[in-house]
Image (cartoon, rainbow, N blue to C red; front, side, top):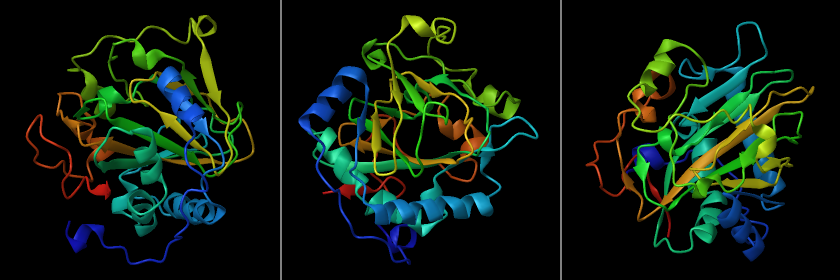
Length: 292
């Protein structure tokens, strides 16, 4: 790794995990494809990252997204914030999440940080996050993958809590990716997807078993990239600020399929995909090893 991309020029908290991931939490994740790990992130990290997210909101980069309808409160997102702000770099590379990834992916001999993304639903942001899986957006294949979703505000059922379809990660199916906003620069990316059309989960919502992931600052949501999930709008007067961080193990490999996220230039146009060979390991300058 070179200093140019991975050097950090800001002070950051040095607090590690407040406790390890329990056997019960790992079992819930394996069974359901999602789990809530309560009270593991220290308050100093929460405040540090809350301020970092607010900086991006106050001075958004042109590459950021607003998935809300025109005139509505923002549903803000930005991919690869670790390349914009050293606080996110510290969080991703030196923060406590890498230890969670290691404790959940117990068979991995190394852990690589793949990317991060900010998601903020402002007070009254009624735009729903559509049902989807993460995997079809990602140029990654292999079982050693995990996304960690960390809230920096209290998240309630009416405040945009994520709904996870329990067990859907074991259905052995990948669904066609969809755009979070119906505009051609987004939707055209996914036309060539090699995957199946998604059922109408909204119409049959009550026939499925859902985990509604209400959470507090200090909690971490684990979710498998094949787990179907989405969220409703934020009907509260509070922000729903969160950062997701995606980690992989040494057995995950590069899979640049036609509909992967790097072809959605509205999402990742500010980032150049690395020149990796299909089937190659992911560890590289852009995807750094964080453990050991």
